[in-house]
Length: 493
Ligand code: HEC
Ligand code: HEC
Image 1 (cartoon, helix red, strand yellow):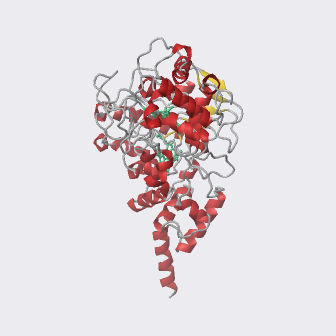
Image 2 (cartoon, protein in one colour; image 1 turned 135 degrees about the vertical axis):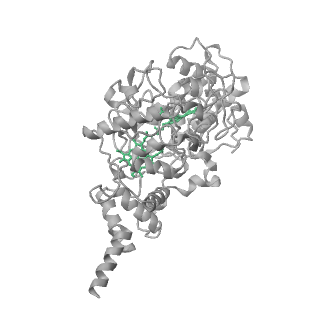
């Protein structure tokens, strides 16, 4: 009898990695949740805008309107669509000069007559989701080139100052809430000035980023003799701004300003809160909200290396699953690259700080709704969540990366240096480990454990993000006269 019990215990340790029953697993997980101060409520103590708020409604129009693309062929929603996880389901995006500007997602192609045409995508980095941007307190972008230098928990960067790119790529300036109300508002100032995203390659008289922004203000308001839009479009914008700022008698010059445009866009993005997921219901007490497989995945995710875990939590921290810090993870490098030389490398954070020790560092992404935001990684190199998680467990596997797994049209043309670039990033990771800069350790894992981790990540999906009926509030009615007048993107999804 005694030896039978010992065997049974040993067996259960083998199967559950230390937890002999579902109840034990629950209590272990809850003590881990306590250790990491998880509440199940990522938006606690935050101001979250309702999508029905007038300013968010104005922001929605601006977010979908091609009038913010200098050549009127690209909108924020060209790459960030709610039906595609707040992103575009592409490894790498295409903004301006698409074959069909209203085509969003797989099948969006760069026009052959477009600038720098090579058959593949035009932007060097994967599109992150706009979902839950209200939860960032420190940074925006993969390389954190927008950052709050006075971060306050829950403030979304609205307090104090933000460091943002200046007129050139390597020059940084400080903005306060007078320039942009919060981190997403600051961020929204930049896609319109990026040539492949929204600016395009014409209008050579517009030299600086501010020239471009001012031009767009002139366009929407009809200021300084700008007549890009006809009278009815200008009237529709004036009406939209009057509604948005609940100021029915103010004139265009008062309402249609740079900060009003980008602050309104940010309010629309900040309304995209999707945090009602099974994991949070579990943390709040519903023990059956997630499967036993997902619980075992969580166990791996939160346990330290010493305890046989994968210690994902050391970087994917808190209820938002990111500490917003930057690390070298050596995700296989595909695409055109982003750097200060002529290579196809992406130097990541080094591009911002010009500090070589920041080479290949990228900001830890949130994992909320990660199931629907693929392809994954800063360049979308991984087209399955399994492959992405395998890499996180053991980045050395990047040496076996197979670019034929990629499905995006024309992307193979941008993979010729992938092996070499990836080797460089892996060397950097190894160097950072040896010098104590990188806390990451590779762990051996079974196929079953990989499945468990993926099951856990899928428990971070808010069901709304998979339900078009539920998402409808964040997508304008394309058939309305107003949508046509404001040239809102007609994504056929
Ligand atoms: C051509 C595709 C494209 C268009 C158009 C576009 N974006 Fe993006 N967006 C991206 C990519 C790519 C990144 C990441 C770039 C980087 O980190 O270097 C990004 C980053 C972001 C982020 C940062 C999210 C984070 O996790 O830090 C936000 C927010 C965002 N975009 C909102 C917008 C808004 C608002 C607009 C319109 C004004 C817009 N985007 C237009 C592709 C696009
Ligand atoms: C040392 C910090 C660190 C650790 C530990 C870590 N991650 Fe990450 N994770 C990152 C960074 C940084 C990225 C972005 C890397 C890139 O794209 O270049 C990332 C990206 C991801 C992504 C892709 C998300 C997206 O939107 O593209 C997933 C999924 C992920 N990690 C899951 C995990 C899991 C599961 C573990 C544990 C096995 C883990 N991570 C461990 C820092 C970390």
